[in-house]
Length: 248
Length: 362
Image (cartoon, rainbow over all chains, first blue to last red):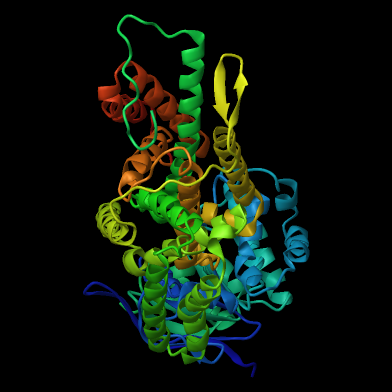
């Protein structure tokens, strides 16, 4: 078994008195793609925000063996290679593609690592489109290009664990295929990935392990292959019928 | 006609502006405008990055000028005690925060950087022959004990409420302004200060006489503005500040901490403010409370730029300078009224022409 890179134990996140995440325990091992699927409003984005230190949480979060419950600042986690590509991309719209990428390396730069030129070439090798658009303002990119830039910018931080929030959201099917191909390519390069998706089939096809999140709790977990064949998952998430919940 | 608000000579009735008077007014307006431009840039920067409307900007002008006056007279800048005190306070606050995070290993560095360093600087400067020091070194000493107040104030007053509303931040800002004003009176007394010119004298250009100090002011302001532009366009820290202004969440996710960005832009604002004070101290007497009015005029410039555009803010600030010099010639009693009334048409124009633009479609 490969060593654990991230582990949560009974993680709870509340907005005021409303609990959005209830006792969620997940594990991600080095070099794996782990996916969290589930319907809209299941708490997937909330989970990622809590892992990133953007939201206060109760329960344990262990990243690379170190407890980082609640009080650890986002920039410290980024410095340790935990990087989130948010659902809204959060690009720097009026700055160039190259500057967006450069800022992805900010945390490394602060730690005295000045290898961003080389990393940027690697990112351009993965996303040739970004190389073509390097002087263009990020705000003028198409939806697919924005997602590529958001991922490329995250890769500039040389992540140990890359967390992707709905990378396929709002993209054309062809681009979605491209994005998932790149996700697999990143895995081959040794990056561990936590993939949150509504597109359950595509996510389970690339993932090693999967969790089904419903109403803030883990309803089901298993190897991704087994989940693809699980009648409950098929009926709720993969079938044409759409989204009944598993727990109900 | 000066920044400090002393009245210009009354216009003899019925005399129009001839070319030489116009030239003097322009010279005066551009000189003051250059200072306002510097301040307006700092205000735009601080607001864009931290959402703080930086009212105490003017206090930094006064502190800079009066510290320089102290140094050129051979005294240590009295603000050094404030720097040391706030340094110790920052060390305490940061230490508590580090202990809470369980990062006790960071304590020695925190204490060294915040509390020990200012004391060492103080001890070092104590034995310098301040009065006979070269002028640039005197400037360095004056800045050394004013500029650190910027990041210190950010850490103590703004960082704990960094996520609060613009209104709350504004109220904190007003509070800091009054505290610094009071401390200014305590440190520097009620008498004004003036410093020797960078270079004495001047020369005749056509019909008008131009002081060398005027050239210094406009020149150094231009160099500082160019330097800031280079910093924002080409350094990774400058880009990080811009990124924070464009998208705070995005910047956070790249490991650009809001604390770092806040401290960095307060340092720049303090530097720009104090340096502006040092620039104008030779041409006008600065009192402990002079800075506020100067800062407000920079603010009018910043408003012209919508607190967002640097070139527009600078242009607006020059306009304020010119408007001020002309109105002090034609209607000196109403000069401040005219300058601040400029804000009304500007706000009207802005609210009519600006539409909400999202940086990012979601």
